[in-house]
Image 1: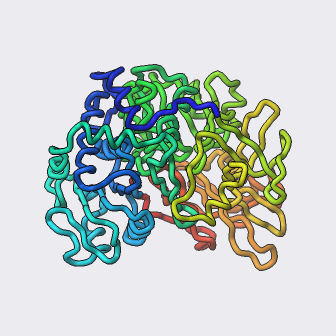
Image 2 (image 1 turned 180 degrees about the vertical axis):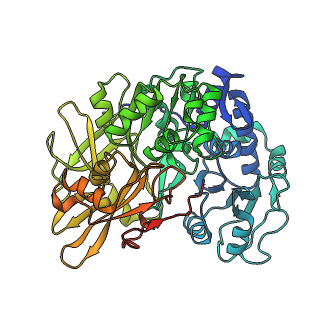
Image 3 (image 1 turned 90 degrees about the horizontal axis):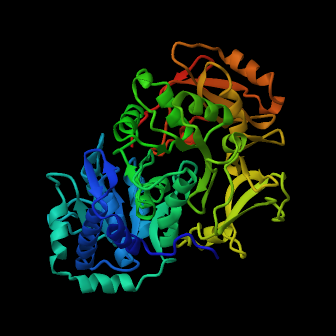
Amino acid sequence: MQLPDNITLGAAVDRAAKRWGPAIGWVFEDRRVSFSEMRERTDAVARALLASDIGKGDVVAILTPNVPEFAFCLMACGKIGAILAPINTRSKTFELEHILTHSRARVLVMSDRFLQHDYVELVQELCGAGALGPDGRVESKAVPHLGLVVGISAGTRLLPWASFLGRGADVGAAALEQAHAQLHSFEPILLQYTSGTTAMPKGALCNHVYVVNFGAEIVDRMGMREGEAFFNTQPFYHVGGGCGAIPTPLATGCRMVMPEYYDAERALGLIEREKCVARTGFAAMYIMELAHPRFREFDLSSLRSGWCVGPADLMARIRDEMGIVGLIQIFGATECGGTSGHINDPWDKRSESCGRAFPGTELAIFHPESGARLAAGEVGEIVCRGWWTMNGYLRQPEENARAIDAAGWVHTGDYGYLDEQGFLYFRGRFKNMLKVGGENVSAEEVEAMLMRHPVVKMAAVVGMPDARLGEVVLAFVELHASMSATESEIIAFCASRMANFRVPRRVQFVREWPITGSGKIQKHLLPATPQGPSATTHFNKEKS
């Protein structure tokens, strides 16, 4: 199997420090970290973990926004073989308990607070009264494997970060080298829980090769050069941030710009300040930025490439209004990385397809029922294999058997087709398929049509129960500011352009959306029944 960079994450840190030393590799909102400092901080955290009896195979959970300590912990795990388990910053007691108990995490590194969330209160509620000691020790029946909680916030109520690092003072370089010498590049380094927008999160085990090369392969196709600035929109708890952003400078020498959390104005300001030449973003993010009242005030002229996930019409709008001539589509899943377009591909390929497989990986289309491999142009389930795949789900053999077949193909649960040149065309998720009177309806196809309406800013589609047809299409629509439309107008627009079974039977207007920190609409929070013909829905749109 062809490998892009067969190396452990810890070795990648050392190599990058030797090569680029004082150059800045990571830009946080109020801090710049050089390659040399990343190695120093990484080794300090690794020593502290070893002093806390954390070693190969142990899980270190982390609950923070996009801050330097997250990066230090990920790299440190890459030095000693521990496994980092990021926790979604929106988590409440139920989610926190699931991840801590399922992963059997022995250490939790966390912020005391983030936005409106009090994480210390959350952990105390989970662990029980008196379970957290002043030295960070934990004794709780609710999370029996957890033994240490470390706080990174100033004035933390937990074991302070500096005190935790002090534990490693007596751990020498030889011990650190010995721990690293036991590692193999295909052993797991990251326990990435799936987003959980449609189901309970599963823990995907990602290895060193996956983590080191995830972002590097994409930025290479975006034409990034050493020393240039790349803007990341993705939260670190998401694979797009933990793999697609944090480790990327190690292999490319680029400068990764990472806000604490995504916000449209914050993104525009940082792109201008750092003169970023490339960026990331889901459709909802670009739409919010383009609609920002001060959008025209920001200088985005440095941008020349970026990735997006959205319909071709939106891709063209982003290219024209933001000036990102090297815009590409990507396809990805936590379980198997994915693929992307290349800036040198023709525009129709970049705007409509998700590109071709990366070196050392394969894409194929299988019949969802028979499992037969389909020919070019035939729509079926997207499957992939190669270096860019997970090792499996943690302690979930039945899920592993469903996700990875005997030939090593990872089944994505997404459907699409490959053309004669190997370009992948995404057509939706099987989980996002509606069954209307026996006809399969892709939610993404209906959403793309709704987005063509001149007054529609954003749209999402779910199934609505129906006594005759089983289910019918229910559309949630946000209109552009100062524009108006009625439910019947939106339905008529679709009816004139789509088969009747695809046309929304009801439309509910939305002013805010339940959006994940990675920019995806949480469809499970959209009601399956409308509130009324003229209802306007407000959701709690948190930034995390």
